[in-house]
Length: 204
Length: 205
Image (cartoon, rainbow over all chains, first blue to last red; front, side):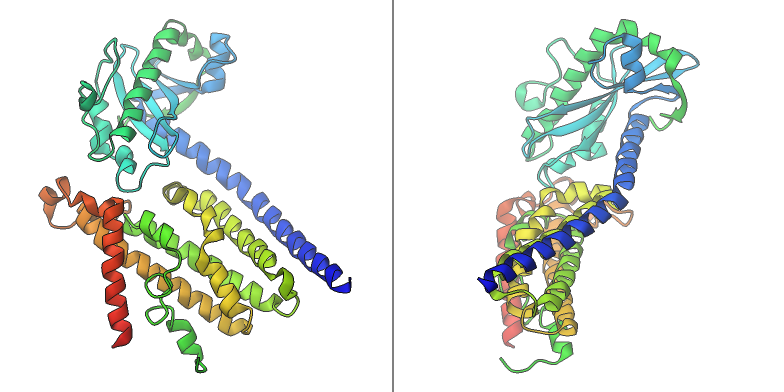
C-alpha cells in the first residue's frame, strides 16, 4: 500500500510541476505567437495587393456590408478609390490537409497575386506552392466562368511537378475568392469610410 | 560495456552509436523531413534540445521516481519539454514551425528520447546524462543533415533553400529538372540505406 501511495505522489508532483512550467511558457509566448500570426497576415495582404494608402480589415468590411458572417476580406483604397481586395481562403483538399491562401484581386476582376498562408503539404513537393515560380502564373489572369484549372484538368495553370493535388488547391481557392468578390464587389467601396491609413502593396 | 570517459559519452552518438544509422531510432522524421537542409537542421536542433533537457531532468529525478511508474513519468517530462519547444518555435520561428508541422509534437514519441532516458539517464549522473543527450542529439542532427544534403542537392538542385544563403548547385538547367525521386519517399529510403552502409563501414574500421 505504501508503495502505491508513493507512485501516486511522485507522478502527481511531476505532472503538477510540468503543468506549472507549461503554463509559464504559454503565458510568455501567447503575445509573440499572436503578433507573429498577425504580422504574417498583414505581410500577406501587403504583398498580394497593388499600392494602397488605406486598408479596411475584415471587421470593418463586415460592418460596412452589414453582414456579420461575410468571409474575411481586406479592402484596399488608394486616394479614396477601391484598388484591390485581399481574401483569406482555405481549401481542405490538399495532399496533407487544409491549405490556406491570401488571394489579391482587383476590382476589374483580375487576379493580382496569391500567397500561401499555411499548409501541411509534402516538404520539397507540395511545399513549392509557396514558390514565386508557381504563384506568379496567376498574375493578371481573368478568371473564366468555369474557373481556373491546372493543365491536367484542361486549364491553363502549370501544376507543380509531382504535386498536382496541392496545385489544385490554389486554382480552387482563387476561384472561390473570385466568386466571393463578385458577390460583394458593388458594396465594397462603402468600407472606404472605415479604412485605416496603412502603407503597402508597392511590391505588387 | 567498458567504462566510457566524458568525451566518449559526447562523441559516441556521432558515429559509433549514431541514433539514426546504428541504433535505427527516429526514422520516421528522418524519412519525411530531410527534403531540405534547413528542415533537417531545425528538426535536429529541436530533438537535441529536448534530448539534453529530458536527460538532465530524468537523471536528476532518477532516485525519486519508483521504477514501477518510470515510463509515465518519463513521458510527462518529455512531453513537457516538447510542448515548450513547440510554443517557443511558433512564437519566434514561425516559418520553420510551419515547415516542420506535425513532427514537432511527434518528438514526444520519438524512440531516441525515451530510449536514452531508459538506457542512460536513468542510470547515470547529471553531467554524463547531459553529455549523452547532447551527443545523441548532435549525432541525430548530423545524420538528418547528411541525408538532407544529398536529397536537396540531387532532388531540388539547391542548397540551403529557404534561407538568404540559398544557392543553386549544378546550374539552373538541373534545378528545372532535378532527380525528383530523391525528394520523394523512395529517395528517402535509398539515401537512408546508402548512408547506413557508409556509417557502419566507418564504425567497423
